Length: 538
Image (cartoon, rainbow, N blue to C red; front, top):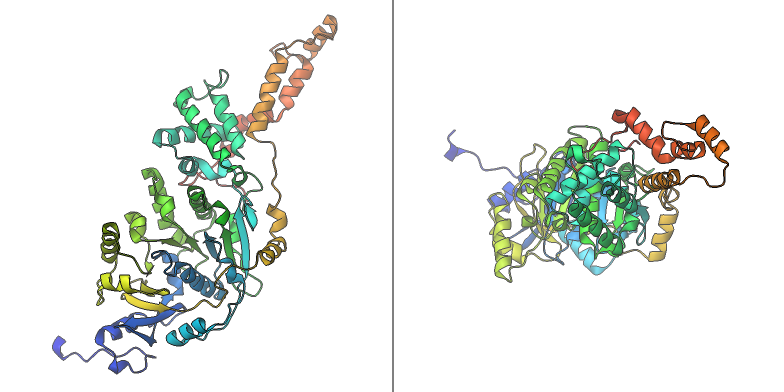
């Protein structure tokens, strides 16, 4: 049989009235007729009509191939995240959501019926049932509602910290040198005062020779780092760094009924610190990256991580930082983690990262200015060939509508499909603050992370060292000279110190730590990931 004699394409099973549908619609329907478990996004839009017989879906195993949710402000991106998150939870997949605007907490409560919800459900043939989902609520440093999420400076690492402090490449390299020194000497960098203490020591008369053999630290660069730390603290950033440090494995929890836990990180209290929260999200992802085991391809993801306001992460980023993001996104798939970047246009995401995002949900774009029109044309070029006039479609989409293309069960891109999205079944808005506080306080994690702890670390050790050095340089005026001489004879360590001073110095935390460091350097040195984040002992 020749190509011209080939039989007409058959309608996919389950699509009623298919023979009356145009050929492009049949091809789109075939592209989304998956046989395995999948998430239901909505119904196809074609020629101004909603076709509920053609359902647009994402195969569950393909959720760890990453994705992009994009669109102008007010087009429904947040509700799309909510829709995807609640279906993932229902299928036993834990989810992480960054709540920038403070309206995602409603996913924990059943949705409210109204005419708009029922109209949308009828249009897309959705059996809508109000439902809440198991949630944990977190807040950076405890600012706002939620269990405090903190990181130690050591764990955060020099690369991410340089991004937050807006250091240049030379300053970033010097900061890496400081971290390397602190690691080797057993000086734990828990909070900002620890880092300041180490930088100050390394530029002092006593400490400036410590780094000479490995590049040194210039006074000017140290001054920039110290000023940046001071400004950082002045903006109220101290609570984000410290202990107890958040264990990112908490994000992979499953509720007792088998549903995946939705971890909601509340960010409204730090909306004015976008660089901080975007970098903190990257820390969470990087920490997961080097703690989770390799699992390869799985039937469903171990975790799906939604990275909101993604453009803030990439603005002003160094090449090394972008390379690290690209590597993390590329490799974390094999650990069963899917990452969805959420932003306004695909051009906000670097090309190397965008190439890793196989699932796309593109909400409406505006074309009011020349820059808008340029962004629109760039967005259209990122989609596969399509029977749609995408420039026209993307500017005409309504709220809760999007252009979709995902990876099929075989890993091939599905046809581009304009879609009217389903309505979330949970509350589309924030829950009552009092109810949120009760949920946080009743969480089993609250007692573990609520209270900050300030243990002995680099600041205390270096302060003790300075005090011991000062004490050893002042002879005792009250003790008789013969007794002093006798004491020196009994306690001599080769430097003529009084035995009590020697005991104080040798017994201090810093000298014990330094001794351990010198004796077991390999055991003490911290293994670092592509971002320089520390591998913690769980």
